[in-house]
Length: 382
Image (tube, rainbow, N blue to C red; front, side):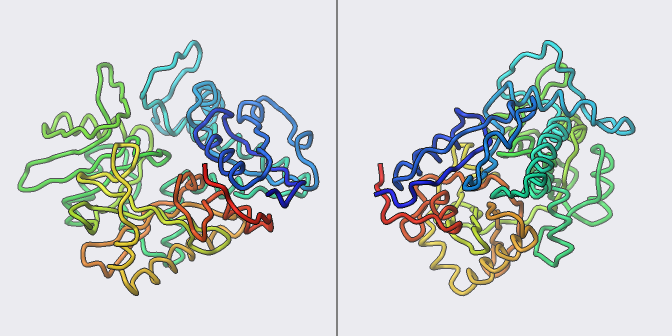
């Protein structure tokens, strides 16, 4: 039964993305009207937001991924913003064709995305309006180095991180100085484990576990499988190639295991409160679900955590206190092997895409709308 006849939700996202389809289905289940969708391409091409926003419009930004034309446009927008004093990978978008899985210049893409966010922010400020997730907050969360620094400065528990590194030699020097033998190398602007390298050394032997497949001509591809590299020359080439796109490097903190698999937690914080929790479990090194990993048993993990869950929950909520202009975000939390200590790995501005994870009978999208005062009597599951 529909209670809010006049709800008007406007989503900025690729119209055919999985996120949009999940959101529309969630609205249908709640008896609410479908959201209107404005593409990132339209925004970048100058479509005025004011023509799509009325006094009762709720504005939601969502991921620009899963659309090649959007990615290509953001790459073009970011090319002119690349720092000429840094040797970041650069992509010429003239006649650039879609190449499945190719990791192009993530720094260049991010700078284009940041420019699009600035366009939205400027228009919203002129209208005196605010989105569910603030464009400036989204820009910070899409920069792992900036997010880590912000959390660390506030006293949030995060893995120790290295200063900026440009290549394997710099990385190795820092590891030697600190006595670290295991690190995670991450694209500063990557998502979905793209470009991740789990790097370890022991008695002069090296191993890199990565989602990156190296191809000829220095091309990198993101895959749904983990590759093992043990040849030092290959590992150096891999690390150098990923570093050229700007990286964030953290000490590798071992994760707790449950039911014979390691795991971490995606905690969706909405209106200041930790709500839906997703356990991402894996038999390997990286837990991201799109790699074929499984959703773990949250009830079992929650029971084993006991009172420690209160500490983890509080930390996740403290993270969102640093972003008071955003209604929600996904917070990735690591439970250490002693089941007593934890750390925050990342924050995801679009981390609410979790199908069939409910709190009080509501999914993430419905919980967000409820926090904004939208009322509905019941939800009919499809």
